[in-house]
Length: 259
Image 1: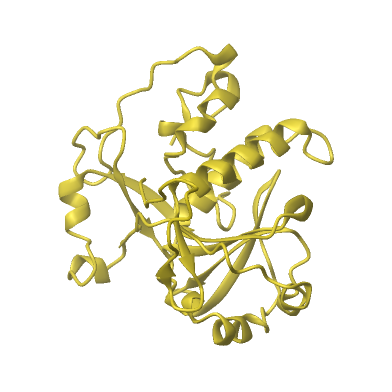
Image 2: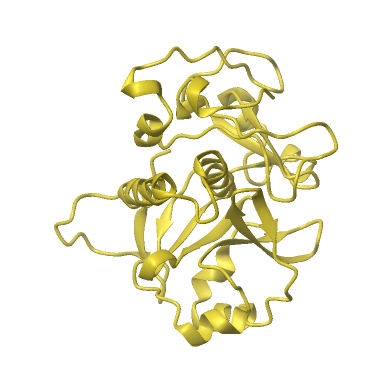
């Protein structure tokens, strides 16, 4: 797992978050590949394309396509890049899928009609405006992390308001344990809520960590966030929280769950 720097990045399609020295990996951080290709311009030097190194499946060593699947090791919160044949071994319901690895899903859902009220947000006790939450099987409970300049910081709060949110928005109860997260963006007045693969949250954490400057992050972080969420909205299926159904096309372009 090589370390990554903006000036030498091969492009975000093969981007890896810097994991640190052995034994120093922080909670919620994992090396991952980043499929949000439009963000490549923020890390390529002067907009010039750069060669990306060959990647291999971390289970069988086969060469990987630029777009490939990922597994999660929940105990370590580590993400592995895998080829399609290996990914099939870990599909839902398979015996391998009940072991130490989980196949990370590819669905992206934008809960456009879910705007958490200030009261609902305060009930969760989360002190920041950019958070992802997921159910951790090893911990046996919901966990929340804040992406920031030092990586992902775990909330030590009890998230007492979570069950109330699930009762009001049943779709939140459909989060796949370990591999799917609720991503909430309330930065600068935004009220955006998404159900995304867990590696999307790791990718976002890595981008923020790489681009952060000074105490407040700087203009580059703000631009990265705007572009990240704009592209996420383009990829995501719009889902209504009341019934978990896709919203009708209102002429704003087709949304799908592409990776």
